[in-house]
Image (cartoon, rainbow, N blue to C red; front, side, top):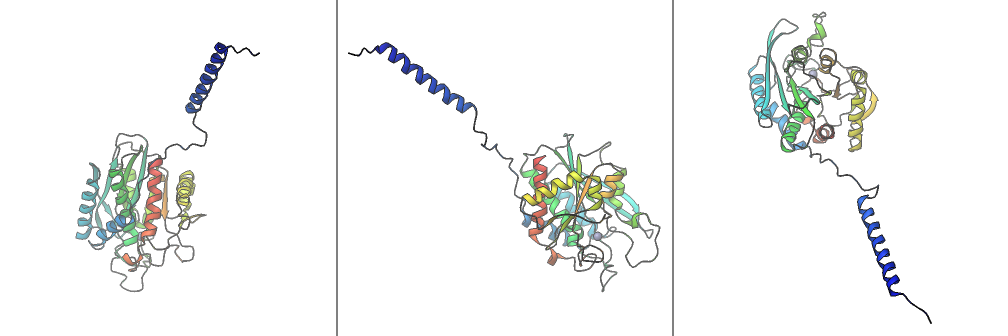
Length: 334
Ligand SMILES: [Zn+2]
C-alpha cells in the first residue's frame, strides 16, 4: 500500500513552477551576448544629387575670381547651403595674386549643430584655375574645373542636404568652401619664384588667420579635392599622415568596410600642397586631404589635371558615391 501525501505533492509542484518562472525572468533580463545593438542609421548619400550640384556649378562657367561667373556661383552656393542650415557665413576679403592682381575673394561657411563643442570641419575649394597651364592647347583660357573644384563642392552640398534631412548626428559640423585655391603661378612661368606657396591656397591662408568664429577649433578636418574622376585612387597623403594619421586610418577603414577598397588605397603618397596645409599648420586643426593620386603621371595627378579635359565627361557617380558615403558615415558615427 502506498501512501501519497497530496499536500506535499502540491507544494513540490508549486515550487517547481515558481523556479521555472524565475529562470525565465532571469533569461529575459540578460539578452544573449550575441544579440546586436541597434545600429546608427546612416543616410544614403545620393551620387545623382552630388552630380547635379557639379553640373550646376559648371553651368556658370569657370569660377575665376573677379569674373561675373565667380560672383554668380557664389550666390548659388550661399543660397543652396541656406536651404539646409540658417548658419551660413560669407567671409569676404581681398588678396593679392602672384602677379599683383587684387582679388575679391569669398570663403563660404555653413554650420550644423552650432552649439556643439565637438566639431568636424569639412572643406573643399570652390574657385577654378584661371588657365589650362598643363594643356597643349588654349593654355591661357580658364578650365571648367568639373573635378578640380566642382567635385569636392558637389559632395559637400549633398552632405549638407543629408544633414538637413537626417538630424540624428551628435557632432557639430562646419562646411567651408575655400576661395582662391587655384590661382597659383602657371607651371610654365619662369618668374615669380619667390611667391609664397606658389600663390596657391589664398582662401585657406586667410581663414586660418581669421577664423569665422573667434577661437574656433575642430576635433579634426577633412579636405576633399578632385574626388569625382572615373577610376580615381585615393592614397594616404603625406602631410595628412604626419598631421592626423588616426583620422586617415579611420576614413580609409570606413571606406574599405563600405566596399570602396578600389578607391581607398592603404599606401602613403607624396606630400601635396593643398588647403589642409594651412588649416594644420596655421589654424592648428588636424586635417587630412582626400585627393586623387596617380603615381604613374609626372605630376602625380590625373592626366586631365589643369587641362580642358577636366569637364563633366570625367565625372563618375561611383567615385562620388565612394567618397560621399564614407565621409557621411564618419559624421554620423562621431
Ligand atoms: Zn587645381
